[in-house]
Image (tube, rainbow, N blue to C red; front, side, top):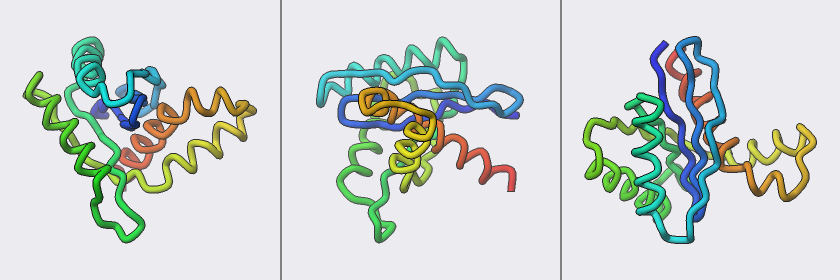
Length: 140
């Protein structure tokens, strides 16, 4: 199975997961950066890509309820375009992340996480769901 990195981009966090050759998804980290310091997040992502040696990234696209792209989608696409300026060998695949945050919160609470643990891990769990849904869509 092809390997991918799954990402959920927040305003201060970057949830990062990846899958192995068996399709098993592994949590990597919930990278934290100062609000608006996307440069730090971009540079960190390029380092992760090199470390994991995975060039394909499934990036959650926060579509609006009406399925259109709003300001958050523009921000996500701008982030990806700026990453490509640092490493143009990376391939971004945008994937609808609708309801991933809600589902991530539900899963974390069901696992017994308290409010602080939910807040700390929600973007990584969202990235997990985004990659899971993407892989499922590829396998028909």
